[in-house]
Amino acid sequence: MNLLVKKLKVSAAILLVPLFFVSCEDPGKIGLDIDPKNGSILTEYKEFVLPSTQVQFDPRSTLNSFSFQAGEYTDADFGTISSKSYSWLGLQSTTPTLSETATYISTTLSIQFSSIYGSEGENGRFGSFEIYQLADPIIDGSDYTRVDELALGALLGNIEILIQENDTLQTDSLFSFTISDEFGQAVFDKLAANDGIFDSDMAFNALFKGIAIVPSGGNNKILQFNPTTFSIKLNYSEVNSASEIVERTYSFNLGEMNFFYLKSDLSGTPLSNMIPDNQEREPNDDYRYMQAGTMIAIKTDLEPLFMFMDTIENIIVQKADLTIGDIASNRPGSSFPISLNAFFTDDANTWPGLAEISNDTISVFAILQDEFITQTIPVFPGYYGSPQEIFLDPIENDIFNKATMSNYIQNLHNGGYEDVSKTPLEQQGKLILFAPTSSVEPQSSPSHTVTNFFKVHKDSIRLKIYYSIPNL
Image: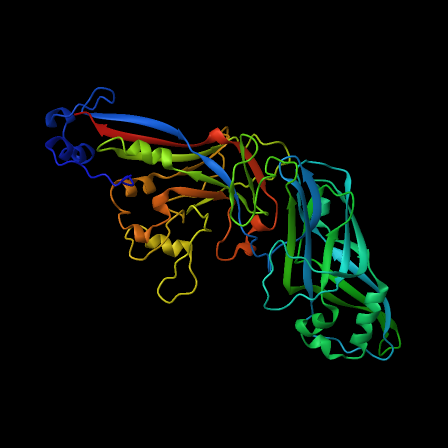
């Protein structure tokens, strides 16, 4: 296959084609008939159903994620998904000096949830969770992915929250729970002794190791908690200078080291034959699936387009749209993403490639886009923004997501990608479709902190092109 790099034949008729677009003359005076069906230039469109498979990527890092989440739910398409979070505790910028009169009172946990994820829109059920002290430390400088777990230590407390979706009272309010006095007294004793563990987060967590929030029975949701409002409050009293007993509080927030675990058991689902680590599979039905948190992506192949283009001389592609249908028609309660990303890959399903620019160690897609047309550096163009787009939000009354691929097709046609060494992935025309994320910092993207998902029929993944050819 010549990879669509077709050169226009040198003939009088063809050389006149560009004049059709720029001349102010009456087309009849230059000998061109613009009848789209019988004229000198024919306009056509064609739609292709693109072959597609499934890929589950290597576990992505969840270290220092924005997410603090826990829960479990079961779904007919994606099996049982369970999640738990681990975190250091963060110290205050200053540590109070306790007087000899200081007396421990209690320890409380304040927590606020921001989102609910699950396969069904259920209301009126309690979400049950447990807070543990860690038995294994979170090691500073280590990487953690969604499949890493840590051993749990002492149980610190239980949390039960009544789940009522779209209830602003819940998302706007902090809920407080009493937790272990044994843990609180141990921390208080160190605070009263002015212990050096309060010199830094690392020193504190070397002793107390951190905390975990995990689901306990009966959940059918994953709840994401607001990490900025999470706190553990150590409550104590002191006698002040006026001989009055006053209550005081020393609080911990979530620390700098944190990650979450997210497990998906696909047994008994159409994806039960999936193998992780970038292995390609077809589901056991006629649908294709995307699940963000567990990195299940859709792989499509533009080969039907390539084969068609190879059969037509002097084709000019004016517009090309890639559509993914039926997303909006997924069942109520599904958390499908509002947009999608697409990147070129290869037969080994390589995660989207990045190229360093000069000595810059931060490779940014927007910067790579500047080199897209000129090909002055070896980059993997993919979708990096204008003029190539990510999939747009489904517009009103439409049930599909659409991406414009005109720029990509035109560059192939006009020979812009002749140097295969500079665009090895794009030349193959194989796309990985997944929820918006950062290939540089995937743990910082919401798509890796939740379980957004959808399914579409395999025949709804299509490419439509509008093109012109000379009628010689």
